[in-house]
Amino acid sequence: MCSWPSAKNITATLTCLRRRLANKPGLLVTGATGFVGRHLIALGCSRFDIVATGLGPKPDWLPENVAWHAADLLDRISVSALPDDLPFVIHLASETVPAKFANYDPLLDSVEMTLNLCRHLRSGRLLFASSCLVYGASGAPMSEDAPLAPRGHYGLAKQLCETIVLRAASGGGIAPAVARPFNHIGTGMRPDLVIPSIVRRVREAREGAPIQMAGLDSVRDFLDVTDIVEGYFAILGLRSEERIFNVASGVPTSIGDIVRIVADILGKSIGEVVFADQGNSADDSSIVVGDSRKLRDAAGWAPHVTLRESLRRLIEDLPVQ
Image 1 (cartoon, helix red, strand yellow):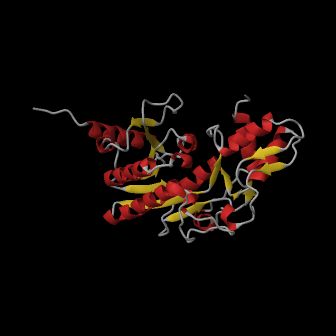
Image 2 (cartoon, one colour):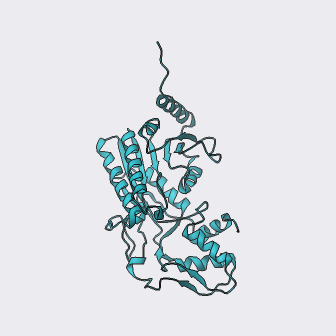
Image 3 (cartoon, helix red, strand yellow):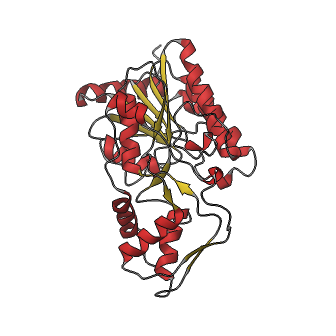
């Protein structure tokens, strides 16, 4: 008696057929519906035959040439139905807001999702999207060799997942890589995050009034999300023995600078930018800037979108309330 093929075999067969017809390399993207995932799919769908995965039904915005596979990475049975032999995988799936890591549940979930994915994959180049938050703060741009001192549960979760991904190579079939991106800016950001909140605050401020900000006038390394995605694609294409790459501009920018640039783009006159924490903003603990020379030298990658242009796009994208 003939038996029906399993869902996994059907998915694998269809994926293989689509890839051959499209003549593009296959790419599995986890966490595809998130902020970075949407930009990655928009930029990558002409270069890769993408299988996007996430929770729930296929999103309306997903391009027609991108396959959708609903999967819960916390469920090993659900993961087992994903293709396991595509040449490229980008693992984005994670809780992405550090403030939500107030307890250990999101940390444990991130680790379990990464474990389940690594156990499932048989081959391919696996890129894990980590974070600059695995580093401690420093007064100088940090290279990949900088000491790891994860800040909070979010940074710790990223460090643990890095270890899992890098050790996945011991099986021989997976070629792992880790990207450590610095601070993202781009269209589609959650409105409650810092940069969109600055835009809202400046929009609502009276002409010439001071801008009140919480916390410290910290210094960060900001990149447009599209440049970060291009960095991920550059890492996928490398066949280097190096496995960890910073994705950074190397340009230090304070939160106060961001406020003033936003005001200038909006054509608004503002007063002094006042921070609730009057500590020393030049102190090493408030400075997080990356050194991405390794990626630049290995792949020729460099950011192309200026900070001002990135902020202008974000401002246009955010609704006026």
